[in-house]
Length: 279
Image 1: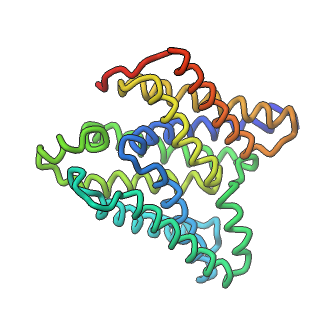
Image 2: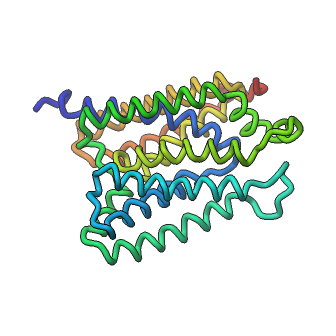
């Protein structure tokens, strides 16, 4: 098999993941819930492991429903614990961290009782990007297209609640209900992404491009453009170097994202770009 045939499916999968995750990362940064994807990913992992207790095939739709149910519970908890108008005495990130820790501990306990539990936990961390198949990519693209349409239809609500929560409160919107819908859709994205890319890569796809974009602008359209393009660049370079140097793909891509952020920070210090007003 040629190098192109080997690396093309992972490359396409990365582009699909970047298209969705880099955009959602802008919401995560605006909401200041940086580790929400780790927490939801751990809830999904707990759900998948729990399915093994009932002798469910880990790659079946039933196992996916277990994972999605656990993720929906996490989405409900995060919507419930959001402070109203910034008046909460406990930052939401604290609740997110608690959910992550408890879900991780529960996953360890479940993994200890099921065959192959250790391998399932490891797969959650590193994923299986190199072994992604075209049917998996098509499924991922179709689901993400549907979720992207959902985000676009309700973009005014989601963007306002993420970037201008006080305005949403003044308008009398049911913020917690919209938060639940946002986190539920977010959880579906994470549930599908983690088995392919692993928690570390998904976190990088989500946060690093959004942070990079925020270094240079506050305009929402420009934020999305910079986030998508830098995420795609880091993924492509990481995959190419992984193939050329015969290095583990996931860790190398994560390192490329870290290098990307360092370069972006250096450029910003040199006066490149500026924080435009949000639009």
